[in-house]
Length: 353
Image (cartoon, rainbow, N blue to C red):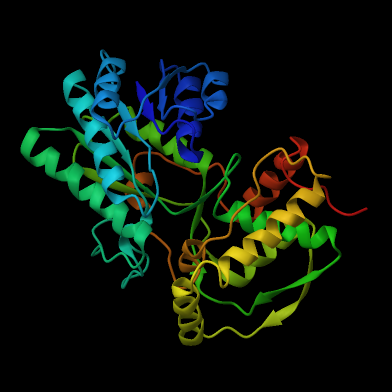
């Protein structure tokens, strides 16, 4: 099989899970990507640029004889045309190999769901650039299925976290760890919206389950999430506990003012708020590792705040009907283990003495 975007959070876990399940894996990503995790899993690493014609030809060559093409590559929310070119290259490779395609999408395609829990057939109304780009990629894939006969299965993970992540919840965990080192307590919101999450390992396990039956499941989409959607208060408290930070207290939360503040924050120039904030995080990150951090400093972006600004939990009965059960049923335990693993590998600042 072939995994595109193999250096990313989900792509690297796909390589590990499929290799452990006995698949022969070929890991594809752009030149210069860190494919060490894929190689450690036993995957054959190939550097290609799917968005370019030459890279698409190389991907088609790598997919020759493959039984499945799993497309996890995603160049970014703002790179819509590149994302579309990338998925076209992967779909062309799958058609040439005569293999079904497993598309890793996102629950951000639903936007702020009207009906909860949100089922796969819910109206797609993305509210941010990430969801809009993901939905554009999905529409392109379903168009190829209808017009060119592509066999297609789609996975839509909820807010994902896991080892090797440098965005999303990894930033919140890193910020809490830095606050703990400085002896600072942090406030948590009072209840807040209910948020659904999923560990990257569980996304990969779902991909193996669905990928093994991809031809039978052609044309279907599946939500992937854990068992316990959490109020923002409990999620924030779980982050603090995992990072070793102390809770200062609770602050009132109201949906309307929170969304208004989010709207303002998302439209502020980068140099006004997000730039200085990320510079402070970077300075604290370097000090925590005495000037020799193992990874680049985490960057906080408004996309994460959007995911935490409204009730979002998802119906996973369609996936469970296939026999899926998450290894990490709650983000509380998952974040604890993630922090422990990260500190063991020296990727997260140690707690204060």
